[in-house]
Length: 278
Image (cartoon, rainbow, N blue to C red; front, side):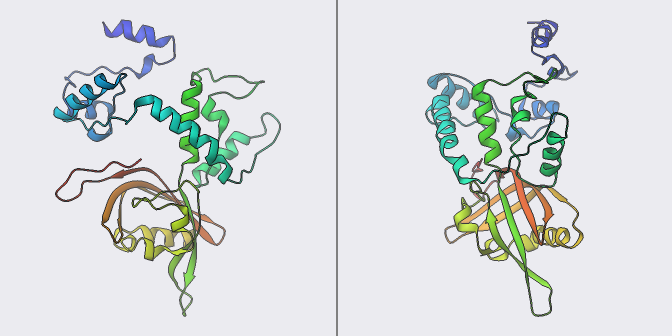
């Protein structure tokens, strides 16, 4: 099918501008990744049907893509989303932003998110501004299933609240994790219950070498938000060492710092392939 016909069809859904044309072939994995500006391992493809999905995943892995197949397929994933949404919100204490139309509620939520706070912006996720203003002209509304998945992703955003620990000279020698988002998981798979009320350096001693601890101290001192993109994260437990990269956002919060991360992705282990986390 000609590109012009594809673009004309997608224009009906506001997606025509997402089509890109290139002078070189993007048939190989490296060229395809370069064409759309992402890492090779982060391109994904969705397919339906158990045997067809398995065959496609096998073929993609054989030619250089890093493809995985969900056990139970999409139906299993959908059940997982609904089960988590039925239980996870009960673990949070929500603060609802109220105000008249046009008073700046959405702007406030974006500002809080930029400063590292955990925000659930339902209007943004629904691509809809409520009964008065209606839907967004340049952003089609998602399906109910897509909306459910995006709400769950927002709730799973990990956040740690850390307070400084002072030595005898009054200098910050460590941080203490005082609170963790209920859905938080670190590279070792440790949740909020195993992270709260623990020494930060005890949990993540490698943060001194990588500069993560120094970044937290910098934010604690200056109060200026700090961003660490694609930062290495190594966590050693009794069983083994977990290596990953993540995009960290650190911001000052009262007497401590908020540490959050997105894009947590396992990196290859010596002598083996990468293990992919969420």
